[in-house]
Image 1: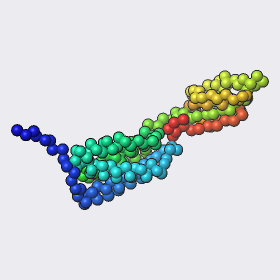
Image 2: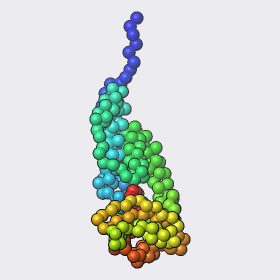
Image 3: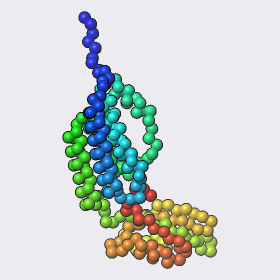
Image 4: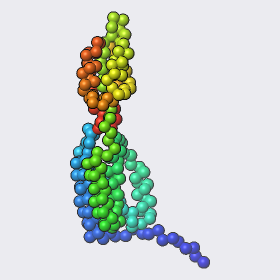
Length: 228
């Protein structure tokens, strides 16, 4: 009795028409996703190359799915090949990672000939993104700002930080020291502050700038910042 050899599939030819539909559909759908990304992006981390990559990743995901669906051996080989690839570019915004997964999902669906699923996913997820962006979902009114003070020491070169923190305690709802950099006779202080209701970060900046010993004051609005 001969042993039964499992059918692991052999590489087969891909239908050119199906391949063109998958690639063309991936291109159109990923361009739509890229435009939605551009229109809903907030902050300073926008990158043209990232938007460019979204379109390519979706199309490449479609190709990968078509290659892997023809043979189990080929699929295992693809996993080994991709294990050699290392992406050095750090994705700072978690929403950018979600977009990467979005375009890959659409591309894989097109490569698996799940055309209706790919179109529905693109339409529904994009509508959700637009609605959440319009609602400003997840944003709090009491966001934190970053304030940097360059302070000069007194006669014995000591910087009295208590004066600045007392002023912050009166003007801000909350504050915290992020960093302190000591120079010869100066100190650079960086605080994270939350303005009181009815006040603004700029008003706090103006008040601190008038404090004795403050040579320079700088403000960064951290509302749309990914990291400090």
